[in-house]
Amino acid sequence: MKIKYVLAVLCAAFAVQVQAASVDVRGQYKTGSERYESRVLLAHDLSNGIGGTIEYTVNNTSKTGEGIDQWLWADTEFQLYYKYKLNDAVTLIPSVLVDVLKDKPTDGGEVYKFGMQANWAFAPTWRLDGRLRYEYKNFETKNLAKQMDNDNRTRMEWWLRKAASAEVDAYYNFRWDHKLNDYQYVNKSSNYFEHNVGVSYKLTPAFKPYTEIGYLGDTANAQQDAEWRIRIGAAYSF
Image (cartoon, rainbow, N blue to C red):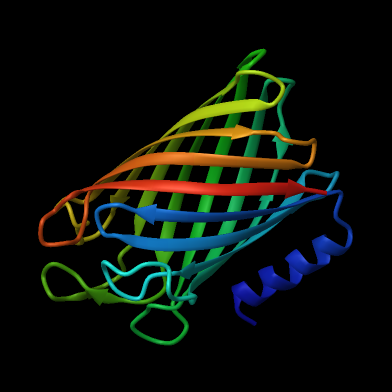
């Protein structure tokens, strides 16, 4: 049995015994490539620290320049993680993810992701989170030398979070992706960077809408316009 099916079964089993669960619905728009995307994220945690998520992503734009006119499945990601609390300030979260892709050269194309995250509540209203992840593609594509290879990469992210009040939270996020083999991003580099700023407002103890603005660098279109991403979503906990 493939790992993705094992993860799906385990996530379903956790849902039966769930201690805390949430659903997160989000839409986004990229200004340079003029594309819309939506996603639904289901998350659940057990009291022993084990948790899981299922993320379903769809493309809402069929071609560059068109509006929200499509609902095309892009990928589904399954995640399992464990929250280990070192002390009142620091929590470690190892995780494993399987991303099942639609756009792949052959059947069975998946990306396996192995990560470690650390959350540090270093002040009463401040928190610093960091995550390092290795991502392995189980299928090959042509690299820059026109040879078949695996387009694997690492991802490093940092979040600086601030609770402005009991209802308002804000954060800055920095992301750095690095291709390990002979591949490049659209910026003609093996490195890709993001800068994101977000804020959320808790309307009720269970319902929290949020928004995020991110700078993604160059796009894949001919003009190489600067790519900005706008996200709007809401999370409901139960």
